[in-house]
Image (tube, rainbow, N blue to C red; front, side):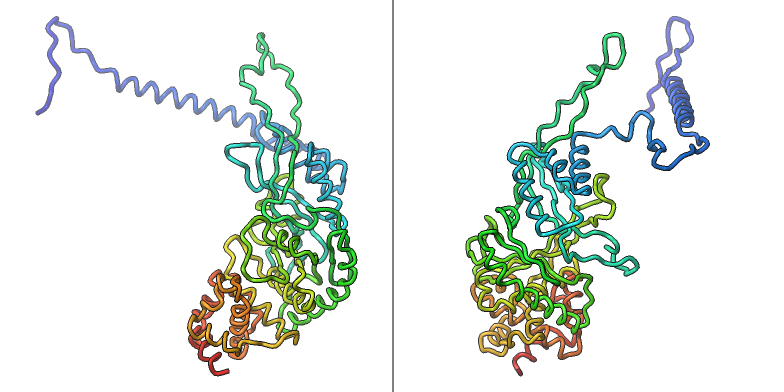
Length: 468
């Protein structure tokens, strides 16, 4: 049924509906307003003759009502801290700290300076969404022997500075209260004189996860041609007594990688050492769950600022990839110092050649390669033909070297099993170095590599090991 309008009874003509007319008026008004905006934009952005003088003297480009130097208290903090790091100005660096952070930042500065650096940076990673005084930052320096890929090498980090950064939790002074827009004007409509904006300050700084040696007190540092070795000041004698062996081990590791065909843009290592078991465990695990496996040393990949920021030196590498390695030797390395050093140095070279990210591959990729380097350097004898290893591989296959097995009390079996896969691949004509790189960047680990190459499949490896 179609509804029709009723006929008026007073003799007047029917009244027209006005909705269409109203719509036309609105559309016309919007069009006029758009033209006005276009004219205003053209007036402020129309090209003008270039001004004379150095580029640095020209005004910043952007909307005229948003000056370039109108920074927030946060921007001013990060800009000031990084300017101080670039200038290597300790006093300026500490001027952005208050309370306990003064001593904490001073300790970081003094200890890392003792280790040695030319480039350093601090940049936020994230802020607590419920408390704007809580945040996490990347703080680090480019210590000696950091990787420096050369321009033209094709490396994504070529000609950039790779800081060895680590995550820190910081507390900041509160942000000033926001001024309501109408509070910024006097009664006569003139703009009130504004209080100068001040940079926020850091009121506390602490390692986000595990403490680093430089976070716990004064250091003693020794340098050699291919290693910087350091420890706590109360273990000075240990550092001095171990420096030469660390240097010899560094040379062995570098030669071993070269003999495998590896090309790594670094010529040495930064390492810490302690004979204090509790101190070592604290540095490795912090308050986290400790492994069942007894560990003699470890190599920790470091991180870089997550993204390019206006306050960072343009030469600092950013992104999600790792950025160098800090090596730490514990008391259990005392009876096998060279072997442990070379094992951990192999990790460092592996990390540098194939930077990782949040999605790290299975541990067997790294541990198997480092164990294989020990064997190829003649520092230890393969034990993968032992009954324990044979049985584990025969019954569990790749499970014999999964992450759980490698961190268990019987982790030594898993280390041998992972190393044996590298030995097997080498016998089949695969480069152990290329295997290490491909399986690290492929995220699926040794199992993923085996699935792409039929001649080194997991069943073929099991048969090979059973026949040894």
